[in-house]
Image 1 (cartoon, one colour):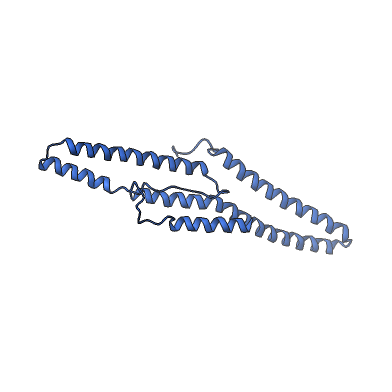
Image 2 (spheres, rainbow, N blue to C red):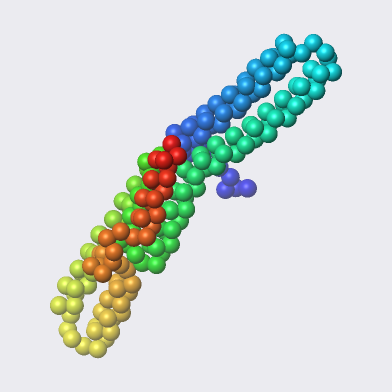
Length: 192
């Protein structure tokens, strides 16, 4: 395993926040079980009834805790999985040649810094490609008009045309994904 990471914390802020949240939820859950057990012990004098009550309380507490931890983890993981899903979708669009994409995450999502890096990278790539197109246009004007140079330039322009660098007027003002993101934002605001 030569490619094994030696540094476990690569996203300090994100990892510290996740660790703290899991520790807090676990700590609160364990303390609630202990407090309920003490209340149960104070009210029951019979040892058999005490054991039975504690077993039922622990079983109910564990089931309730499992449901709470599941729901909390589901909500917390959505702040991770959602951005990862959107990053993957944007990367697929970029691979298809669309350099007009940008990634906008919800306010409470993780990986805003990654989204900024992706957006900056796409913008820089788009600008470099536009410079190449400009250089090709200038070359077109200066080269002699023979078949070999014309074919080479046509091939270059065909390759450049595979990239989308500007939004067309026919494209909608908001993409379907932008509308879905707005609906998700509204749903998050309602659930908070």
